[in-house]
Length: 227
Image 1 (tube, rainbow, N blue to C red):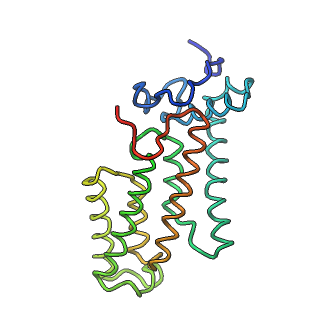
Image 2: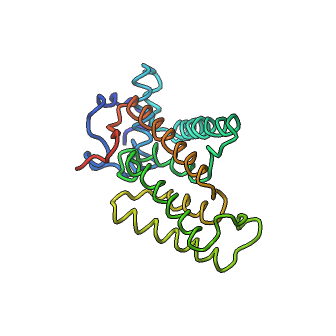
Image 3: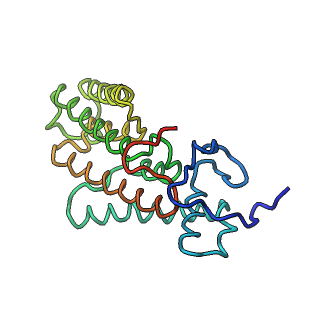
């Protein structure tokens, strides 16, 4: 049985198909101890920056945990700092699962820039329209005053519409389900806040494009790769 940390060959050059094309995207094995493609990203970054001595550890769960921790800290930390400086809501809960998805299974269709941006956009629009339909656009957040029947209707309609439209338009992105509830529950209900929300999504997606492509992952610029 090969040792878990034996030296492995460097990653393929940028543009070489990974993930679904190799049939190993979700397989848990020696090189992918947590499944997904995070170990491929770490290996690619080590190779890109010529950290040859660290290549043998690219599939260590400790190294993957450190990468995930640092990447999550930087990704959301930058958004939070931007929110602090601008006094605008550049940070919101559903950015967290989006950030993890973009670096755990980057070549999955749900993690593509198109699905990420369009999914959150659908969630934002569905959430706000649900507020408008039930007369809640100026109401305080549900977490402050509690849930009443109009809020129940808005929450249910927002998630139902978001789920249905993402499937209909073929742009599923699971974290968008949290985005629409954030809005329909009144946590972010002003139109200008929704604009800032979408800017934050685009910025995070841009970071995913840079890091994944730097690591040699065949991450799309917009639509997911077809098999």
